[in-house]
Length: 506
Picture 1: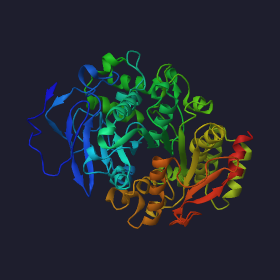
Picture 2: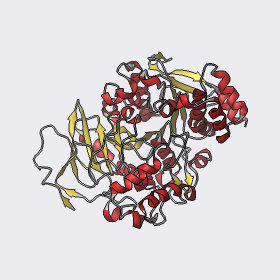
Picture 3: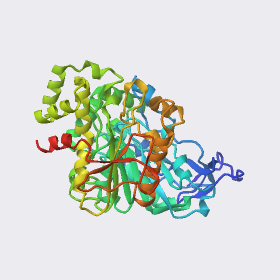
Picture 4: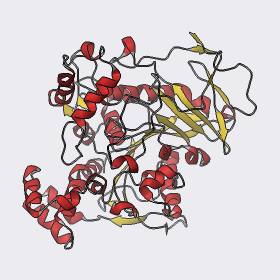
């Protein structure tokens, strides 16, 4: 047991909330009427002998641990230019990366009980991001009656490298450990462990799909939100290549024993060199979840379409122009000629009839824009719609959304990650405005944030569940009156179904 009294005085701070967890007492702060606790360890620091191992419980402490600042972030490098200006990604030094933050509605958490809980798992291609990104500030959720928990987990080769002498999917195991911490501790913060929704975007959504397919997650959450990320995993042998290239650059065997002896900064440099320059369309070396026969016995998409987590309510969707974040900042849209488009269609085995349908629906689009629309649907919209179709008659409701508001920033349109500031109602933060601009419609944030609050609270985001009509909640206007008098998304039935069906027919 650790005595942390030297850096956390025993005398109480006036008005500062304290909560006793199973590992010790933490002291947070009251910010605009809600209690906030940052940097709480949910597992031991994954360094030294624990490096490349499954997460282990943190060592209990005596005294009161200060929990007012974000905890250390996993080793990572900033996004490469020009994305670094659009996606600020703060880094916090330290070894205890496996930490989380809690925003809870009551300044006295011990006096609250039974509140819904939303656990946020950040995106970033499994190599970027953290819970300290300002866009993910949970204050608005707590303001509206939801306990918000945001989680850090191991990234890159530390969390997802495939090694013969270490468990696979270590970052996913971290997320599972964080959910177990929520189960065991969230009641002390006023939350109900039986009313947990897990939500994430991009790689966070892919991670959640893995959790949905993992038998070990049973009972840890009741609902799930997948934003712009479809279920995906690779066979172990197919995923080894990235780790092996990193080890080769370092001149060591691709084993946990060898990599554990490598300086973390050197390992991070080699990782960045191997994985840089790619995007979801061009591919290149990256980190993925793997079907390891243990945590993930089966491919997540196959498992979910076969009925895994059938009783879990699901909210899923995409942004209309996801590809613009991948293509536009680096000028890729303009560099794609008709010839390059034809070669890409062959490479990705896009049926001729499908390509003709997309061209016909976009008569003024450039070849790069046509390819981007196809990539958005191939990677995200088509698999998520197929998942919704597979769940239509299963227990647990499924809701589908689309975010279509175009940002004025750099012709990015309704691009990947743009919806985040609306979901979290953080449009006023400068880091959010890097992507949204300063004049994004607050009315739309009110509507979208409310839908996520309502889903976490009662399982109904405000539009019909998926059925044969294929209803989609569309967020693209300042708000629209719904039948019950609230502002809500427009409901569109079977949007662009000719394009989706063109994939099904081939």
